[in-house]
Length: 332
Image 1 (cartoon, rainbow, N blue to C red):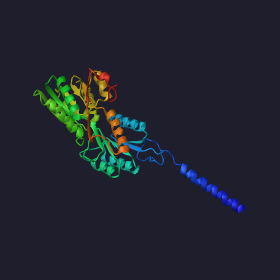
Image 2 (cartoon, helix red, strand yellow):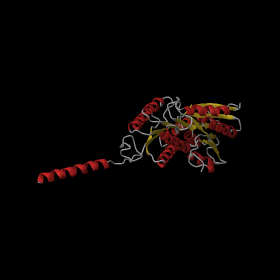
Image 3 (cartoon, rainbow, N blue to C red):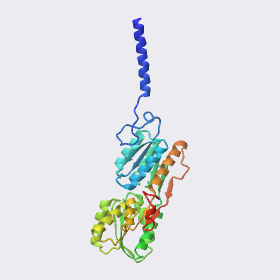
Image 4 (cartoon, rainbow, N blue to C red):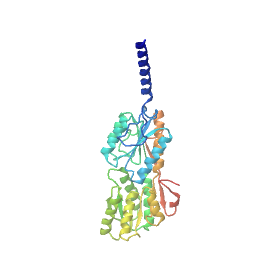
């Protein structure tokens, strides 16, 4: 009798152990680093994962798009993992490997290089994970599920028109370029010049890359001012460089120089309101990021976005006349 009771007790304990094992498992944080506990269907209540990868969140533009994508994905019922590659291709590759290892349902990516990112996006596709590119395109078709970017050419033309107007259609000016590996840098510069070069009395005396960086732009502008102290304007491929240029101009007591940027940064909009930087071209980062998540959701559910791969979203000019109407990369 005691033996039978012992076996019965063991049987009950075995059943309880199996039930506990089936119900166990911890839920990981929805946002974290590549080294944190994987977010999978088995430990997140069955939710699918969307991985969001952008350049550094120290830049308000990239933080805005990451935050918007994160919020939209969560509102649609997904877990998220938000990462930054800091414009380092190797780090981006590791983060896409993380997305693959975690069996992500989709990747939202502001990439680290138009050519250098193609292989990583293809690797994700081969693993069955669609990528939805925002802000920056890659130099390949049919690899990403979608490439949704600002209409940089249209926006740059708006900026060029405003710059010519501010300059009175004449004068010496300098141009600050972005990263050579980023197609946006070339597209914006071409857009600026499609307008400015129509005016024969506009003379570009310096053109130099500051790699989208504020500190670099400050240093480059100081060098330009030493060689060309009489410049009347600086047109910049992004707002971060425009802020660096403006700081250098303030340092040199040359705040009469017209500066025009590109992005629609809230910091630049504040400067415009204070009669500092004169204008910027706002690209709707939050809107683009939300659109990418919405299309990822549709693709996950139906296998198609219903949209062409390459999609352009028009930009808006922000100047002293309308600066009060805009908030964080979009209308208030």
